[in-house]
Picture (tube, rainbow, N blue to C red):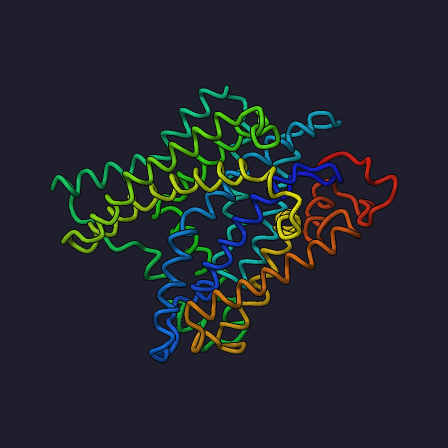
Length: 405
């Protein structure tokens, strides 16, 4: 998740990654970390706040935050490969090993939290060692095909024209349904045992059945092109391109969002409505993500010196540590084997607690990186990648000259 181990960093990448992690975390709090159970009926005064918190978080972040992560993953791959090409050894083999280490971290994390994204990133990142050999035009053309999700588009066209049978209920629905009683009433080891297999099935089939695997790979490829051409770190040189992306994303959203709302209000059979709105939501999310990413990069030179933005960049730089820590703290808060707060915390309280925790994490990350070169898990990931425990953690006069990750 991190692009560099040196003190000379592309901080806009860290900050943009930080915004994505904030959005992802706030959605996770509303969902009680995949414990999809509503809180007890709130008092009347709280209901409007719950509605606003839920709708605002999903409008701003659902389908977009993970997309930013996928984009940043492709950018990071490009930057890392460029750095490693100057080292001895095979950079492609090293990157595959790096992904294997990430998978191992994600697998352990997934025992606690079924919705782990690290294992998905690790598996889907492997083809990049071959795809990066393609030129920019070929990468962008392939990305465009993947982003429109041809299988889902074909299915939706058939459903709306009456030429396709009604699709079955997605398999991941029943898997998640079976997990809910365990999360509510099971002990810690019951949750671990359930996540060992059912959790893997749930997140794998969710990724496939929602079409996220296609979008993720498409965004990986876009990130490759962005990283290869140094668009983010040279934003001034690419200002017109970024402005074009911003305007195109805004225009696409202005067209697609009313169509999405129209599909949601149409009297379609249940599973047809699900497939149609799922695809429309995916397209809208891509448009919003384009506005989010390009707008932030254009704005960044004006705000980068602000203390909250510098803390956000530190948060993004330690995204692996912060991401895992969020589950380690909040899963026991929400699940039955811990405090069981899923019974009481609706969207408003969940988002409020999430914001407070993000502020704490940003402050701690900023403090930590004043003294150390890496976050704890970032150090572990890098040390395991290079198979050495001699990797310096603290800042020293010599380590500031170390090569980038």
